[in-house]
Image (cartoon, rainbow, N blue to C red; front, side, top):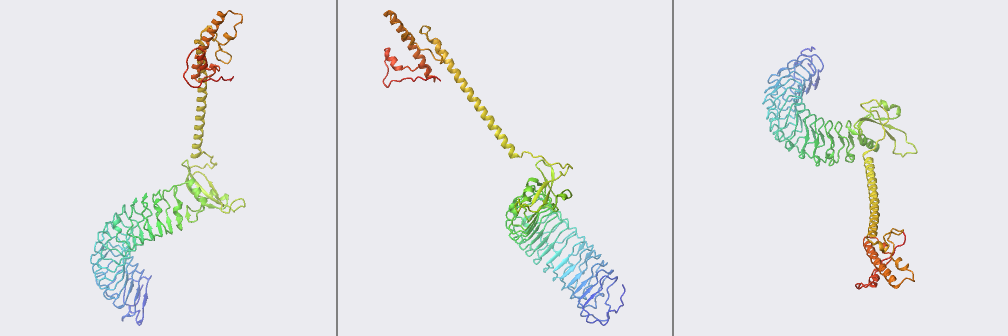
Length: 557
């Protein structure tokens, strides 16, 4: 912790001096002559509390100064005038509270300046005047609340800017309009709620943009309109709920996109349509339930959709992806078992769900899923050696273990699924319909027979009793009146015989009339084979032309 004032005398060719991790309390020349060849001075992790313009006057060609991890709270104006060739200045992890206008005065060749993890709450608007060659500026881990619109306007060559872990709430329009060479911009871990349309105007060369861990609730797609060279975008750990269509259409070169740890429930289906170079996509820890947005993704190497709300997913959309992580989703057991049986190597549904023997099943957590009754299950894959009776590809057996909400491990009884229930209901409906039709046919037949009997009774009633046809024959038909003419004795008088024959003719007419009625009603048996036209001619009734019609006589039924 104590070096003599001239401890470095005689070391004229010294190039690198490292006094780090000592207890030095100040910076001195430690020589009575200039150390012209010294280009690197490392004083990190000491107890240095102050530095001034005389501290470095013996190091005129110094290009790299490291003062990280000391107790410096203030840097007087002009301190670095004596080291005009300084290119790398590291003042991180000190106690600085501001960067004043003259803090970096005289450092026209400075290319890297680090003020990270101090207590800086204010940066003067003119703090970087004269530092036009600055390429890297680190302000992360401070207490900066306001970012002036033209704060970086004097740094046209700036390529790396880190202002993460501060208290920023807003980025003004045109804040980077003169930083066309900026490649990396880190705004993470602030309190930014939204970006304006022109907040990043002019950043045509930006390749890496990190705005994670802010309070962003929505994004304006026009804020990215100058991000044509963007390759990495991190918007994780914000409050996004929706990703609109064509949000990233101005960044076709994007290779890495992180939207994890938001509250995204929906992503437009063609948002990745123009992403031909996208390699890594992280959508974990969101609320996604649909996978339609995956269809245009072609050359993806890694996809992380763990901790979402997927019950099932179209795995055909994942075939061309090298690695897919789907841990901790509320899977349907039916879907999960089928997918595990496919043994898809590029898709991972969880960890520690494969066991070698049955004895380890109860000691394995498995993959959680929900069965058809809404109960939680754990699926464990038992890896068994291949057997001759099984195909070579079949080496997994799956078991549904204990319910997550109950210690009951009794086997689950088979239940009818939805398809079986529908088939049984349809079969029952067909049986009932067939029985109804059969009963209907039987009733119609019975009614028809009853109607025939009724008509027969009616025919018998209208026939005169003197004709002898008031009774039915054994076939249920009217008895023939021919018996009156055939049964007369030969010795009867001629008048008597003629009377009986007239009576027989009248009865034959009546019987023929009844038979015709019954014939038109659908029963031809009652005419008993009588030639109706012949009978009419025999009794003097003229008939119209045409063939004579004989009514057939049916035999016994």
